[in-house]
Image (cartoon, rainbow, N blue to C red):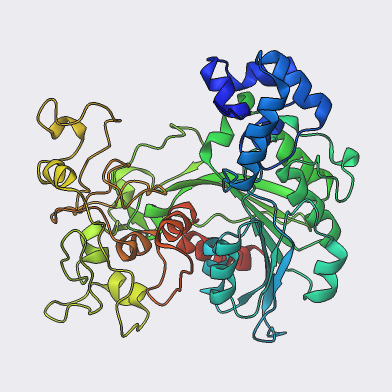
Length: 470
C-alpha cells in the first residue's frame, strides 16, 4: 500500500502537532506537506519516515502521487501558490472621490459598502484566491485587482499604479497572530511576516488618512487579549490613533445578527465617532456585556429605533422553489418591503435563486425541522450542534450565515416555510449584497464567497462615520 505523509500519520494515530515537533518543523509547514503543496527536502523526508517508521522510498512515492493532485485549501497556509495575476481597472478613478484600498479583499463586500456612499471609490484590492479576485474586479470597475500573496507584494507598485489611499480597509486571516513582533523588526517582503504585520507594513508605506481593520470577535480573547493589544500597539507604532468596537450588523439594518470586531485608526489622531445603532432586536452578544460592544441602550431607548429587518422582509419577494428547482422571475403579486426594494437595486431578472437538490432522506429531515435540532424526532439524526438541521425564524433577523448555508446540516439555514435550505440569492440578500452584484465561480465557491464576506452595510456605516470624524 502506497502512503503519503498524511495517510501514514493517520494510520499510526499520530497527531499533526506531534509529528511536526518530532520532525522539527512547524505545524503550518507540515500542513503544506500533507496537502502536497510543497516538496520536502530529502533530509526532512528521511526524518519524517523515521518518525512514522516507514521506508523513505515508499513515502516518497506516496508524496509524489499527492503532488499530482494536491489537497488545496483556501487560506494563506493551504492555498496552492499561483503565479501573480493582475486584473486592470476598467474605469479611470474619479479624482474628486476618496480612494479606498482593500487588503485581503475577498469579493470586496466591505469595500463595496464604502462605494455605496458616493464620496468613496475603491481603487485597489489584493487577495490570494483567483475566484474571489474575479468577483471583486467585476464589481469594482475603478479598482486594480492584485492576485498574489500579500507578503510578496511591493508597495512601490501599489503606490505607482493607484491614487494615494484615503483609507485602507481589510480583515487579515488569523493565522500566525500569536507570533506578532514589534513593527520595527518587520522586513519588507519577508514571507515569515504574519498577515496582521503585512497589513501594518502596507499602511506604514502608503500612509492613508484612515485605517479600518476588521476581524472575528474571537480576537478579543485570543491569547488572553494580548494579540489584539499587540495589533493596536503596531498601529500606534506606525502613527495611528485607534479605537475598537464590536458591531452587530442587525443594529444597522441588515437582516442578520452578524458580529464583527472593527478597529478604526486616524493618522492625524482624530477621534472616531462611532455610529449609534438605528435598529433594535433582542440579541446576546458573543462578547458578553463588555463596554466595547456597541448596542442600543436597552428596551426603553430602543422605542425610538426601527425594529430590525427580518428574514421575511428580506426575501419574501422571491418566488417559492422546491429543492433542486430554480426561478428567474421576481414575484409580482406582492408588495416589496423597503429593504427588498433597496437590495434589489432595480434588477430586472432574478439570478442565483436555485435550491439545492436534497436527497429523499434529507428532505424527510427538513420537513420535520424546527427551531433547533431537538425539534426533530429522536434518532432522526445522530450528530450535530443544536443549531444544525434547523429552520430560520421568518419574523427575526437570521443567525450568522456560514460558508455552508445551502446545506441543512449547517448553522440554522433551512427556509422558514419551504422544505429546503437557502438559495444563493437568499443568502446574498441576508448578507446585504445587491441583486445586481455579480458573483463569479462555481456554485460551491460562490456559497463560500457569500458566507465569508463582511456585509456591505457595515462598510457603508463605517464610511459615513469616517466622513463625520475627518
